[in-house]
Length: 446
Image (tube, rainbow, N blue to C red; front, side, top):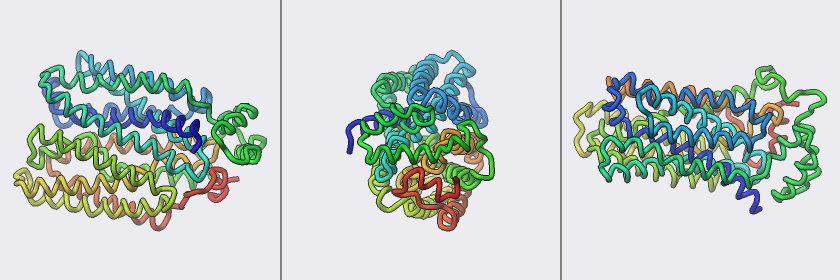
């Protein structure tokens, strides 16, 4: 693999690491936040969801600057937002200031979920695109694991009221590193062509080791079709109906699995199932480790067996594990014994494995492939917005529903995954190994 291509992909995917870290770090602080700010189940849900409100806004807003400023410069601004959020959340002086800094972090998460996979897709050859874009998800998972591990290690120092502050503050270090490394990445060749900077695009493609550069440039120009279309034309029109519906569906199902309920509330869920506080934090580390292993597996095979087969395998794993967790909560209620706790832990590890191999490996790859060059930024933004809208909804409502019955929440997620399986089998197209411009044609877009 070309060195420049691999390095640029890994650096861009660091946005995914921060995405994962920022998503999961709050899971180790919920009990302290509840105590420090006097939160009820409803206000705790809102506190967790506050970052997701920012994420929704970040996903909506990221498309425009990535088209005007470029993918790389937009990622640089995203790195700055991550840094501000980390420092500010750690130094927050009251609940309202904490919400503001978490919202800023959410803007960064939403933006990086749009721009990082899109940038990698645009610099990657078709035969490697799935694996390279999936590096973003691998880094998301690495960030989640790093957050769980960081929370566990910080908790061992018994820092009292400073503990939750340090958990948030450590994110400033990878944010600063991300910002600095972006200076050595090339610009997106497809963005350069769209800006009329053809010679620069040719030079970048040569540096990335692309084959048949002139032919590829011509295909990109044809896909843009700027003599008949504008880079500013509306996304919501009949011509783009199919990719729009595909993006909304995969992003919606991703969150209706309940994955972010587990990411944000993992220690709390394990405590509900009878684990002690330290044990719950350690079990959360096991969740992160399992996701990392199976995301690596998904990354290794996504360009070989395809997106659809991974989604089918993941859907079946989701259904089996969620039914088991729901059954455990219905059986034990709030009075878990060791066997019941083990069932919940084992089932959630299967759930995480299914996610890492299926939706986790596929979603950002599929979203980055679905839309044509001229509306890709806005299409990716739509998919990310949908993802984060439902993430906010799930994260806000989970503690409220779980306060009544954990079984209700997991049973609902199981039903949703049955619907996902039906959608994958009947509707979802395969995009493995197909050039971006060819996918556009296969979806009937001129």
